[in-house]
Each structure stands twice: as C-alpha cells, then as structure tokens.
Amino acid sequence: MNIFIDTQLWVYALKKPYKERFKDEEEYKEALEIHSRANGFVRDAILGHVLYVTTHQLAEIYHALAFRGIRMNKRLALEIIKKLMRSSKTVVVEVKRKHYRESLRLSSLSGIHVWDYLCIIPLKGIIDIAYTNDKHFLHPTIKKLVPKIENPIGKWITI
Image (tube, rainbow, N blue to C red):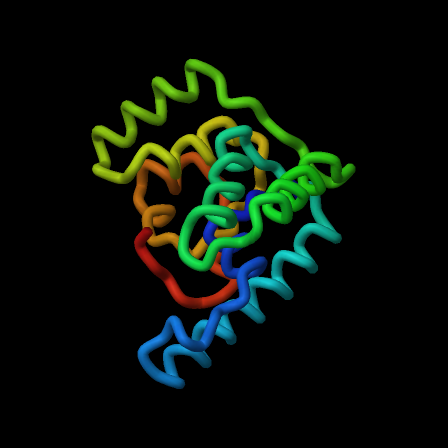
C-alpha cells in the first residue's frame, strides 16, 4: 500500500514533550500519550508500506523539527530527513509548477493554507491512504484528492 504521513504526525513521533511546557499534569500526560501513539504508528507504518513524501514536505518536516516549538538539533533533524530520503521504502515526489498553481487555486477557494495542498496534490492518484490528524484534510477540496484519510492518534486538530 502507498501511504502518506502528514508532517504533524512526524513531529509528534520524533519530538518528546517536555513537562515544563504544559500548564498541568493532565495536559502533559495527554501529550505523552499522543507522542507514544504517533511514534509507534510511524515506526510500524514505514516498515510495512511504501511511504510517499513531496519535496515540499521534506522541507516542512525539517523546519518543524529544527525551528518550531521545542527545537531539535539541526544536524539531527537533517539526518532524519536524509535517512527518510535514502530509505528504499520512501518515494520522494517533486513538486512541479502545475502543483503550485493547483495548490494556490484550492487554497484561495477553501481558505486552507497552501502548505497542506503542496503535500497532497503531487501525490494525487499515487497514494492509497493519507494519515493525518489535521482537520483541514477533512475539507472536500482535500478529501477528493485522496482515496482514504485516517487519523492514527484519534485527536483532530487545526494547524
């Protein structure tokens, strides 16, 4: 099966929450549970399927790991991206000019930021399932691009 794993799931899987960043114990425990579920999901998913990523998404994952929230060491984030790119189970799809045009068009119609479209439009007709917890993927303009959308961690968010 050909799969796509959205950027936020990579972030949840690869960045362990720091307790001091949460207002209370309950919120921290929920974040730890999401991290654990995402980590297990990503580990299992990349073993059993062909993973598709776009050139845009590789940059997005790197940025999210190295520059957003609790920042991962930039060299480590780069090594993760390189490992992902070198894996025999990963197919990297280049974002082309036509993908940018379509992403901008759909973004202007839906009000959803262009970045989600740049992750999915180049994979249209290639992937069987998109794994995400981003509510934007439930919008009709994105749902029509992917045969199936699943949330492996259960909690939906809007980024």
